[in-house]
Image (cartoon, rainbow, N blue to C red):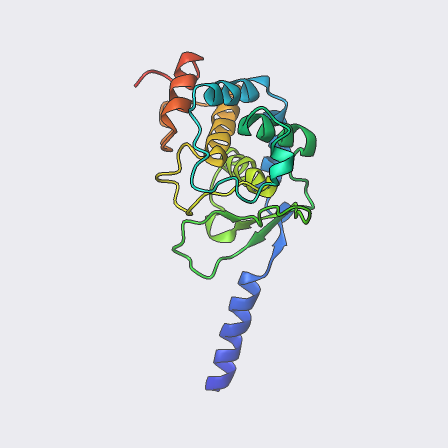
Length: 211
């Protein structure tokens, strides 16, 4: 009897950790579709470009070490490279977004993407099933963030604190805020910690209010 119970618990855990299609979750599906709205928004690229010109994005600590150096040398700067990746490679498709449950339910990890290592580049991402109770705008933030990793850029640790100006966090947060703004959502209570340069830009453009 004891062995049977252990077996049932093991089966339940295995099934909950199984990788499934992202489209099984309706909110995730909405987010997959919202990616195009971000990548078709010229203000997204304009703000990213201006932040780079003002040295507002943190590319230090080996964040670009996995990007092919020869490819990177063809661009004026790292942000020009990143914008080109977004425009040329586009969004995650419905076949490239998966759901998976990390073994640790207390982990803050929202997604996992294997960085592109030239010439073998994967184009998939897995969203953590422990963090599915959130909005379509939040999911889009994660997808735009993870897309940066799929291009090859990484950050030195998995905490958002201290990484606010990392390109993946800047792009993801900018995407979410622009979507909220375009959909006439109230941004007064937006509580994510933003890169100071990004926050200043959003205030200048009248998207965020002065605190």
